[in-house]
Amino acid sequence: MALEHALLVALSERPGSGLELAGRFEKSIGFFWHATHQQIYRVLGRMEKDGWLSVETVPQTGRPDKRVYSVSESGASVLADWLAEPLPMETFRSDLAVKLRAAAYGERQVLLDRVRETLADHEARLAHYLVLEKRDYPVPGDLAALDRFLVLRGGIRLEEFWIGWLNEYLEAHS
Image (cartoon, rainbow, N blue to C red; front, top):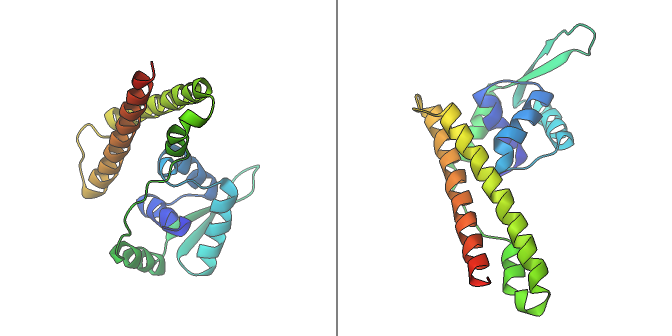
């Protein structure tokens, strides 16, 4: 997947400015597809030039005009084509897994401290996902909401996996 596709998805859900998109990335899509503000703005410019986006300029008082992006007909076609492409098998690439495998060759206690820190990060992310689930999806309504809900459920299950695995590792070494 390219950042362009993630932006097309976000803008299909709701038009927005570059700043709004960056904020939305930090709160949702960014949990599984990271992009910096600079990358988002650079790619938005390229997508506009390629005709994938429509832009409305909104005047603001005391600030530069805001550019609000939405998906054009061409962009919707690009997104539909991308959705129809076959999916490659998801790969698991983890620095942590390699470090766990190498634990016998270094300072195990230092690694166990890193594992505890990583576990805390996953517990915090899971707690955040559960708040989002309760707040945003008490009963999914339309299909777009159902799709977003199921992606969130995937994130919850992934965090539950990490927490279970890291707890198993720590328990085996206590």
